[in-house]
Image (cartoon, rainbow, N blue to C red):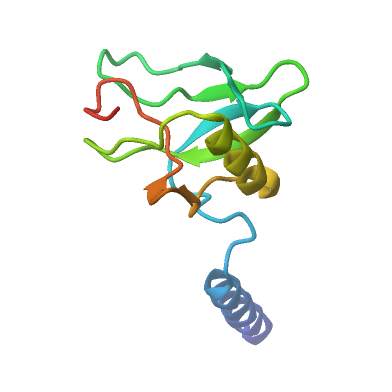
Length: 123
């Protein structure tokens, strides 16, 4: 019985230390859009499937990039927020920012590199 209590206390201590560590995947619990970027930062449409039966606009459940495109996680824009305007300079900045596989925390000309969710009032 005493051994079981010690094992339980040790497991609890390990779990609390692990919970305090920063996640290796930033913003992993935050909803993210999937972008398919070419080497120059141009965006190509992902193939997405939704498992939701709701008629309300919601992010797709599963999105994949087909072809030679890099799959990148990007934040959704807040209602009314607009992403940076598409331009060659913006695409190059996006390609550079996406090298870590994510656009979270990245901006261009003062605007977050976000993705407008259909019917959220953005863009």
